[in-house]
Image 1 (cartoon, helix red, strand yellow):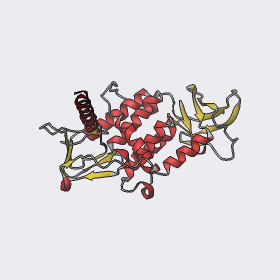
Image 2: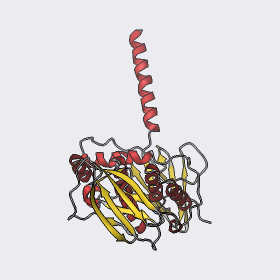
Image 3: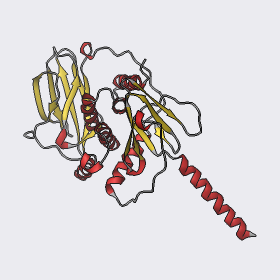
Image 4: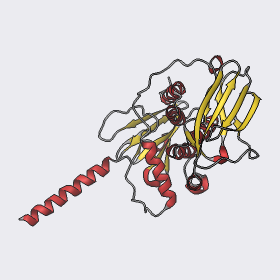
Length: 317
């Protein structure tokens, strides 16, 4: 009798594990291109179609459809590739795929970033703000600030009036001046290869000064050499040659996601700004950029990007 009970318990546990697995997200919505169309989603077991949000998590049986022009891109967990949904293959139902081997490093990297993106579609917890033009405001340091940076891609960026002249000073871990530039216009300032080499794992502070508004300061850390190698190896996965059928905007989003995971917020911001310049109507890029700004203390810019993502994903009249 005890043997029968043991068999029943094992069976119940197996069914519970299967049910729990079935509820795990299998895909994430990484691109929403509406144009003159409409994108809708329907959770499994529900009758009504709804307007999905950027970076929506999708489970087995969930459906996505595009009506008219436009498209959606889904990225599957476990590094199992992506799926473009248009009117021609709508509705598309998410189904569980085969379990992938954990020995494939590229798929492991892709799967890890996909899992990260699944957690970025959150309920609205910010307050929408009326953002005034930064030209009428004191200068604001955009990047790097409270971040790690890859030493080969360091650039100082800020918002402010084009009528002002700026000074940038870089201070080392002991507070001594490492490098400075004066009489600058408002544009990104790259740290040149001819300047003093920066020390891995060290913390630096940079100052942005104007005669009219005084000094703004922000701190950042140089990534350790081992981390630089590891991150660059992982970034190499997110290329068309290595990743396969992932569209360009999705690859940019995933590269930024990897950088975000590594606390490389300045590099993630640069990746997202570049991608938005190429695809300004992509809501998910704005959403993740909002998270970058939120993490680095730029709350007003974060609210602006969250609002932009919401507006771009909303149905068009």
